[in-house]
Image (tube, rainbow, N blue to C red; front, side, top):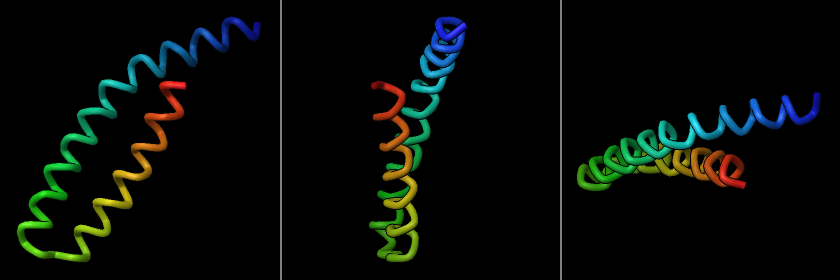
Length: 62
């Protein structure tokens, strides 16, 4: 039973990683726009989102 659960988790992670990378790319573009506009509130929000996504990516790739 444990092997079945591990296999399902691995499959879910394999599907989530490419989507997460696209989300990170989009958020980086948003951060770039916020930096150009000198919108500090948006910059901080983007950084916070990127940090959460980075942590998720590290967890999924482990």
